[in-house]
Amino acid sequence: MAISKESKVGILAAFAITVLVIGYNFMRGEDLFTTTNEYYGKYEKIEGLFKSNPVLINGYKVGSVSSVNMDNATLELTVGILISEEIKIPKNSIMKIVNNDMIGSKAVEIIFGNSKELAVDGDYFIAEQDQGIAQAVSGVLEPLTKSVSSVLGNIDTAIAGADLESTLRDASLALRSFKETADKLNNLLNGKDAQISAILNNVEKTTDGLSGLSPKIDGILTEIDATSKELSAIEFEALATQVKSLATELEKTTAAVNGKEGTLGMLVNDKELYTKLDATVAKLKSLLEDIEKYPRRYTGVTERQRKKGDKAKGVE
Image 1 (cartoon, rainbow, N blue to C red):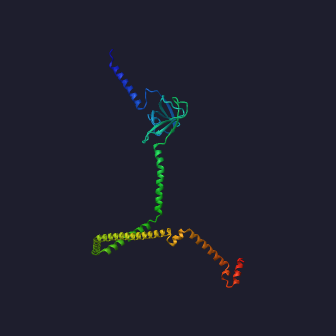
Image 2 (image 1 turned 120 degrees about the vertical axis):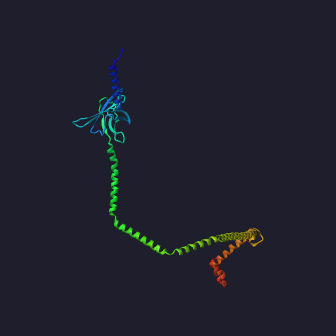
Image 3 (image 1 turned 30 degrees about the horizontal axis):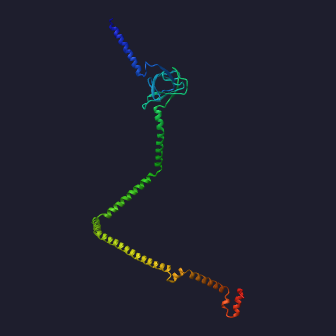
């Protein structure tokens, strides 16, 4: 069965129109092969939101803006969005217009609520809106602008309160004094090049002379060091001799004490002699105490005086 040219043209035109519609809807973010639900939100302003702008959940695109309509009486804007019906959204969710990038393009962010009841096609969500780019930038720049203005005001106040004329005059006087000092120094040194050269030559000769004396100075220091060592050795040797002699004498004394030949040795080693001496000392002590208490017994010239001393002591 032959197909006429007109039929072929019609079929080709229908196919082209179908592809054009599918492509157009695809470019708008709509999928003709997916069942969707349409939800709405009402706003006073939308800050440049347009059809086909993305709809996001947690930053992921799940749909697109399907319509933006204005009520001519109240100027209220109704925004419609298309989302796949497979995505279950709580009925009390929020439909928020947000900034999608830094150049100011908009998107709709779905913030899930906590309701157990799910939204159905045609429901209205709670409408909210972020600040626009201009407002956000203004909010950031406003404190900075205030700080800069405050700093500039403080600087202006400080400058206004300062006596700039007096400060500049003092600076001018200081520079003039420095210049006068430099001029005097130049006048002082003027024509003294020969003298300065002579002084430098003398310094150089003195340095050379000191350099020549360095070996002699080193020799003197070496001799002093050797002499110090010899003196230290001599002193140590003399001290050692004295200590040795003292040790010998001490040894002899100890031997004499331990032996019985000498008087000290006999006193130390003879216990009986020590006992007798101790008893004699005790008696002598008693006698001295008696003489001190009753002197008439020992110093009386006559018998009668001595008897009085005995009577005072209680001796018959």
